[in-house]
Amino acid sequence: MQFAAASHVGLVRKVNQDGYVIQQESGKEHFVCVADGMGGHVAGEVASALALKIIQETLQTTVADDPESRIRTAVLRANEQVYEQSAHTDMYAGMGTTIVTALIHGESMWIAHVGDSRAYLLRGNEELLQLTEDHSLVNELVRRGQIGPQEAVHHPQRHMLTRALGTLPNVSVECRNVSWGSGDVLLICSDGLTTHVSDEQIYNILITVSDLQTKVDQLIQAALDNGGHDNVTVVAVLHADRLEQEVYE
Image 1 (tube, rainbow, N blue to C red):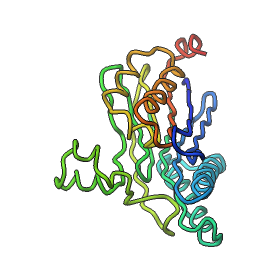
Image 2 (image 1 turned 120 degrees about the vertical axis):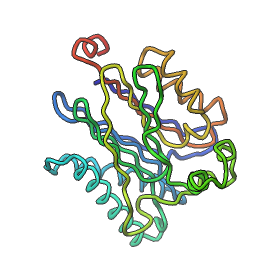
Image 3 (image 1 turned 30 degrees about the horizontal axis):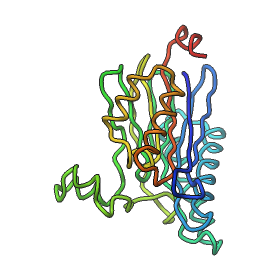
């Protein structure tokens, strides 16, 4: 596997409330995660950092045959910790974060998410698949057929979440299993990317740029060029066989 990542505060905000984790273990499982915090002052930054820390620690210390159970448990523990911190510290009251994670085992990965941070899979340079469904008011309106996809792009409430990590004592974590193969690229990102860069633009950058880190950097630059009103974070993972990995690294 090859990994690349970057995070940018954007052109408007003074604090980057996004965060990410990459845990790479040779010959074993790999883990990547992106969190997009929300809350006043430093609360969003605290929420995203705490969630990432708890998820990583939980995955490192738990043993189970079922990877879905492990990643779901990790996200639920993070929810408990963020909510508890929010409930007991006035300056963090109401804080929360989105989360999107991938636990990778060879040809298979488990994706878990809460909120509107997304996971995509570029399969063989032929198609870009969105692996997650936004937990947002606008996406719910689209699902119900009340507005169309084009209306959703510019809807004034497009950033209103229907589900977030840490805002309530319990949360429903959405998980799915995905198969992938050599040459495929997993992309996880905060909505600072998808708000400003269309799926078509994301696809074009991924297939026209060869170096993985440059793909990530150009995606972030595209978000900045298109307004950059939010923090933007992108993590990419290339599934490479042994020979390809030696060449890339």
